[in-house]
Amino acid sequence: MAGRRCSLGFLGMFGRSGDLRQLDAALRGADLHPALVPEGVKLTIVNLMKDHWPEQPPPQAYPRVANLFSYCIAGPETFERVQGPQQRLDAEHRIEAAIETGDGLDAQIVLMALHAKLINAEVVERFRLSTG
Image: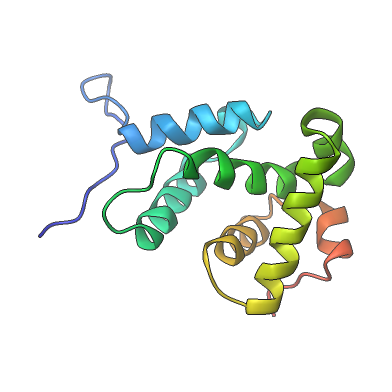
């Protein structure tokens, strides 16, 4: 069976795939404007989600992924101002668990933010993240 493909659209002839539209909406919900995230990064996030959920990512997965990614980009203080202390703690626990296991979707999201050089310096320092 052929895998599902994402579409960015082309000259207005084809629309964006549903996956990218759902991710854009989830990013907005996490107070991260989708225009601030390069399309290649968004495609990578969607593909990581597809690897994690081969059939189709459930709708509730998009806000969860967007919240973690938003924390990585915004940093703890800015993220907490918008999302609240409980959401900040949840994101931090997810990062700690991802570091401990070294694998999984959360680890891939954090690593991708790090490689894309979009991650907040305070997040890198707090969790001692590196690409090496």
